[in-house]
Image (cartoon, rainbow, N blue to C red; front, top):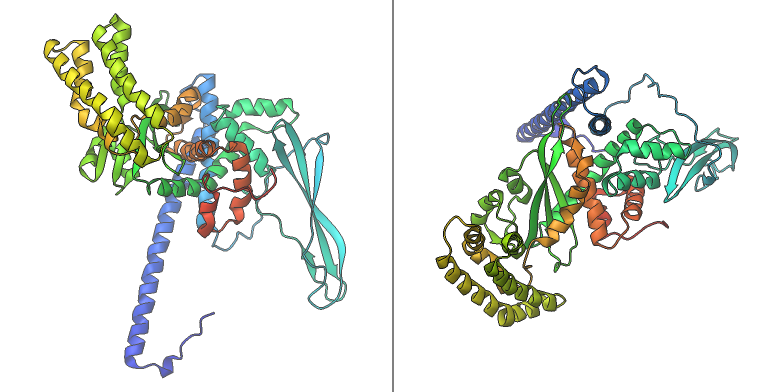
Length: 512
């Protein structure tokens, strides 16, 4: 505790300075309180809207599949908002009125049990006497190892001193879901099944039911929401690590967004950013946004400057004059000629494809080289091919009428030629954007299951979880093993050590 100054010993100037300092502190606390109240009010309002959607009667009806998905998302959003509200109010004095907890069905007795004892580090009382065990508290948590459900039976012994009546008991282990039944293993399974295997929660509910476990999808949704809040700082930290690299990929794909109370879906977008295959950092970061507007890319990238590999979408172009260098995608240029060749067996398109094939042959040979060696190989082997291709395209364009498919294919490459060939001068830059397109493919594969509530929370939560799952895969880790360990360690992990849990830094701390 800071010792208070003796005001009688202070001079007039010192008193004036102290008064100014106290006024500044009061003003700062007022701003902090105002901000907290504003956020609290906003979250409470969102929570009321979501609960009204969940419990009120609705005249607009969805088909069964969409309805089930939306209910899952509303439950997840409610849990996420309640978790954020709890963080805002955790410093306030606790409510003296005990909350009524809903009764939970006991876990099936036939499931195998694992006893885990928690005892004090010392059974010696502070008064010097020996403690005596007088009882215990027992709680059960449902665990999941792929293919097998088990129950962890946590036994916390109670120890008392006969002389001074001191009661000692080991603390409850920190959990992501406080006072809930799921272990980190079960939570990891639910997240991986939903976001990596594209299994909606209503299907997982049925799978659990066949194992004799009654876990409503609303409960599963609450778990997902709480996990999303806890994992968001990891996704944010990974974004910062990604932006430290000078060459990045970017791409975007549409997903369906369904606002509570609305009958029709509309397009939202997942933006994907990743390091290149040549980078030492293996990471893919997803950003969920309500539209394809270029402002979302600018917001994500912030003041980042470097080389951005992307398609010709106009949303990226605003950054090209602010320290971002455009790198074109040769695969997109090739696709124009490939489609032309498939459509009418164009001889011209076939010739263009042969040139581009030679460029990719050089890339295959240079794939495992260091950037400097790769750049040398490109300069000596690929650059002459590219120059010949450019000269040939210019000559062919003079012979082709405007408005034809052939003209459009040629114009696509000729107008972007500088961006398409910048990779030749930097061995750290890839020839195309295929790498990030592969990272965004999981969203396309699970598109029928990606429905997000209108608050955007569900989409942003999914983006954070998918970021960690996909980045774990890129680093060669099983997403289940990674998330299980991270969710075990996260409740006690120091903020200053959060980077230790990022996929590229991760080292398992427990036996999985």
